[in-house]
Image (cartoon, rainbow, N blue to C red; front, side, top):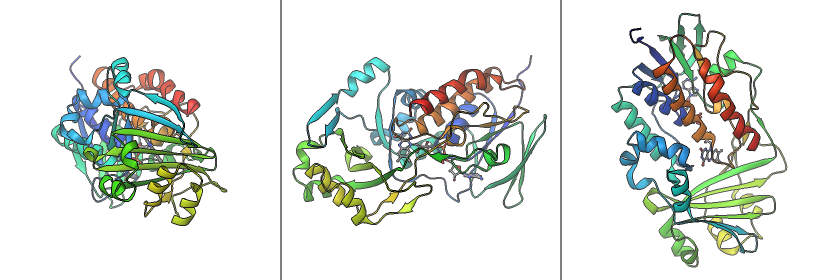
Length: 353
Ligand SMILES: Cc1cc2nc3c(=O)[nH]c(=O)nc-3n(C[C@H](O)[C@H](O)[C@H](O)COP(=O)(O)OP(=O)(O)OC[C@H]3O[C@@H](n4cnc5c(N)ncnc54)[C@H](O)[C@@H]3O)c2cc1C
């Protein structure tokens, strides 16, 4: 059978959508990515990249594009509230066992690397193009943007994140919910400032990732940006369910950790802006596609999850890579493989997360 010519539309250029666009372009399809924002980008917060994603980045040469901004630490330490060492893990040993490294990276650095790779793979990236509506028949999917521009695709990937228009249209009853009153806070601090203001931190932060586990929350610190910046992620049990990002009073934030380890506490006191981030979950579903099997959901659209296992973006990127494999080898009008092979994988993290 001659190879089929496919035009695939990707709605949403986050980490999942970009990965799908690259994988599908590598599979030989024409790819058009529609991104609502006027510029392609991501927030500056850090992200952990485990071996299930670093293997993709290496395979696609993204490790060379992102370079020193992908950081492999020497130790991963878990501390108790009284600063006793609970666990020490050697990531190099982990990398040896998994076959691929554990990296830490700013999300905007990872995103910029994916954008560069997508361009090199010939993906047509269209910004300022918010998808408002789509019609799907057995033959094709017609997408309309808020500016009234129409695009016709053989297959549409819905990668437009937690508030997805594509999901709301197909499955209006699916609503991501907070599983608890726990909310997350994020910030980034320059290392030189941290060492100037908290000199004792030099003994602790030595190209390491450090987590303090305490009552009602945790604090996680790790390096970013070729070791010039310190990522701060903390979680804490609030007195209410956080459903959308809320501004946080810094005194309220500092109070949460007032009795914690002094070094960690002094570092947290340097954070000059943070928000309460909701942690929303979508329970496992019976399908991630429409009845014609030509609109597919991925990433947070299909299976947003708690951040504790650092797998939300990772599984979104896995979804994208998997779609590339399916489209390259077997699509011929059906995407049933997605359901059989990919579906249980998202469920694993939803159950554990
Ligand atoms: C505190 C915290 C820490 C985390 N840490 C990690 C971690 O260490 N590792 C990890 O793997 N995951 C982590 N996650 C999870 C991760 O952030 C998300 O799962 C991931 O970013 C989802 O990617 P996505 O591409 O599915 O969606 P998004 O990143 O939300 O991308 C959606 C894109 O679609 C665009 N869009 C939206 N609507 C439209 C529309 N109508 N038309 C066109 N475009 C549209 C948006 O502008 C955006 O660019 C963390 C989450 C939190 C809250």
